[in-house]
Image (cartoon, rainbow, N blue to C red):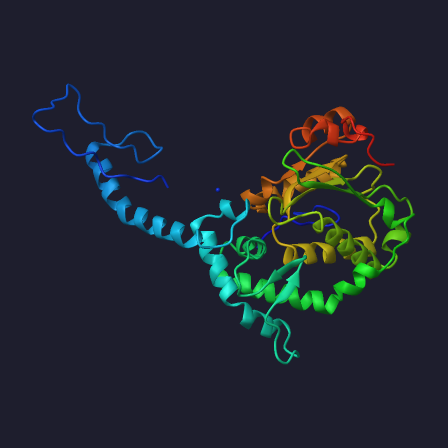
Length: 342
């Protein structure tokens, strides 16, 4: 299970083709040096006999890869799908073929069951589509390409969206003086991904934020959905999240804050797969840093590679964030050059 999404307190929360050796030269064309054996591995050069066996073993794999490549070339493509591995294509196709059954399980009261649905602005159906392949790949990757588990995750996500009434949540209005200050979308990273900021210390009245836990959850989901609207699923399908803990006291969290953090974490882990490229925790209190290092051994290497815990101060923060975000896209308060937001 992916653990890349944690809210709002971060409690922890990618074949070398082998070709046949060249034919020996004829007697009329002698050579002063022996023919080089093709290199088939990135490890130190093994014995000649081992290389020969590796080449022979790789031949059927090469043929299979070429067949897979030919198959995927028939699929609608975009810059993101062109990066899929053969294993990812296989999982995506299997998952797509199961969509009718998935829809039937997700919407048991619908008669007949829908043949297509729209998720994050993308139509999912058994008809091949590059954008749909990108969305399906998210669920497959989140479950380590286990199609059965990916299908279960998709069913659960569709059910949850129906029960949570996403359409209604997207129309709900929230107090701008409270929730409008908690989340901002500003600038892009060096690869064009949108950058979202969660400013947990921007509102001092925590009761106004967490007094109604379900209201906070609805706002947080709406903020996530609005951020996803900035993704085209053609060249960009992820975002960068920055969690700013300036002004936050980790020793004064009440039951509502803990409940909100737990529920939000569950929602984003289970129903928003593979949407984060990087996540930065900045202005982190010392206690939270200790908690992170305490749970670090429990975090997968893939998730850990996306997370960075940064200290305080514009210079320190800027030095870390500027590796991913151009200073022109980074607010001055975080060591960048942009005016940013209030």
